[in-house]
Every structure is written in C-alpha cells, then in structure tokens.
Length: 193
Image (cartoon, rainbow, N blue to C red):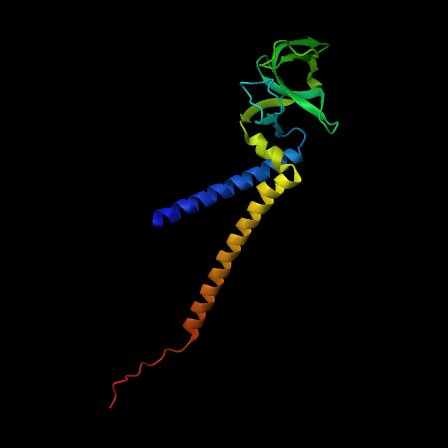
C-alpha cells in the first residue's frame, strides 16, 4: 500500500511539472520577446524526418548562419486568419550581396529549393531543439476549450487538492492546540468501595 501511495505522489508531481511546463510554453509562445528564444509549432511536413509535424521548435537568433543550419524565417504563407506564418527550412546555399548574407533554403522533404532567397533581415533564428508532438498540446492550449482542458481544469484540480491538504493540516493543528491547552483529567477508579 505504501508503494502505491509513493507511486501516486510521484505521478502527481510529474503531472504538476508537466502542467507548469505546458503553461509556461503557452505563455512564452504567446508573447515572444525579440532577440530571445521563441517557440513555434511546426505545421507542415516540409522538414520531415528531421522535424515532424506537431513538433515544438525552439528558435534563437544568432549573429551568423551557415550551410546546414535549420532556420526559421518570415515566409510568404498566411494562415486561415490571414496572419503571416514563418517557415522553417535548412540552408543549402548562401551568398553575399553588398555585404548582406542571402540564404537559399530547402525543406528536407521537398524536391526543389525554395523559390525565394532569404536575406538575413528576414531570419527569425536558428532551430536549436525540436520536441516532437508537444506542438499538438500547445496548439490545443491556444484555443479556449483547449486552454480550459489542458491548463485551467488541471490547475483547479491541483488548487482544490492542495486546499484540502492545507485545511486538513489546519484542523489537525487546532485539535492538537486544543488538546495541549486542556488540563489533564484525573482518572477515577470505578472499583471504589
């Protein structure tokens, strides 16, 4: 029984840690800071197998890029809301035009290189890490119902659970204080003549 309790406690802390991580990733991806790490959800398969659809890509700007780097740049694509969607592809060639680097990119799964050359000014950053499948949770958490299901409801459960533990501890402390403040009772014998 003790092992089950210990396992439950470990599961609880893993769940809580994952909840905090997803909430942090949602907040960071919703409010990107220029020049800092950005988090993007990969929505196409152009970089498979290196980066799978539904992955989360951690992107950081660097001072220079080289052939072979996977970069994210301002693309020509727009989503259903009309917002520009960045593109993540690998640099396959580069040249310098009037002192400014220009990159030729290609998705690993694409047959041909991208038709548009990318000046360094349009590069958002280099992909340092791609975490498969986490993007699905992030994308879901960005919707109202997904945010409720993945963040608010689990957070409310954690708060409720912790509140119950705090209330139980307060009751225990009050009972102990009451017990300590009462004078000791004298035992009477029922066998007196």
